[in-house]
Image 1 (tube, rainbow, N blue to C red):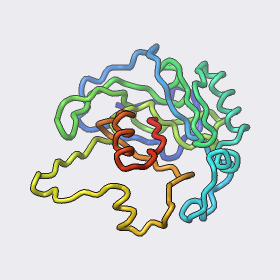
Image 2 (image 1 turned 90 degrees about the horizontal axis):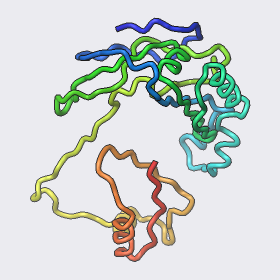
Image 3 (image 1 turned 180 degrees about the horizontal axis):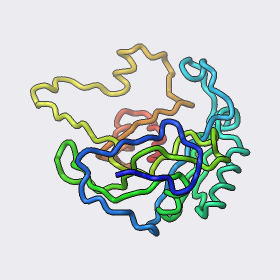
Length: 229
């Protein structure tokens, strides 16, 4: 399968995707199928090393204002989306993400590609996984050259899978609570984690608020604020 650009544009570095081996039942995606893609925009300024690898921190508002996407770049995306006939569904300057929604054919044309509906075998189970598929390099409208650094979601092939390992009962000898770990690692007294955010990528399972409340109340501490994204 090849993807001939539908409209002229500027090549997007790093966007090339090779055809997946073992692709079966490839059919063209319905032109009117509603889909969404996420654009990642450039930073308005590079992150200082002290923030990227050191101990310094800034608030989410400060991150967005100093190192997020600039309003001018977001406006350029809005103008390009309007010209292409797609909707700007969400904007997050702090994470530099803009979500575009529209018909599959329109979004594919905007970024110089074509989409097919394909199935590839799951590497763990061998069962077929349906998804959209593209190959080749994307392009962006000339006005977005250098502004958009990634276009995500046109091709929604599986990117990751859970790597569950079940330990034998006789291999589980002891476990530790967060408070015990804090003692083991000599956390300073009074450490609460206030002002810190921990992100966890979860590839399966789930949680319920009642479970968290029960767990942390059992430890005699106030639980964290947990937001599922």
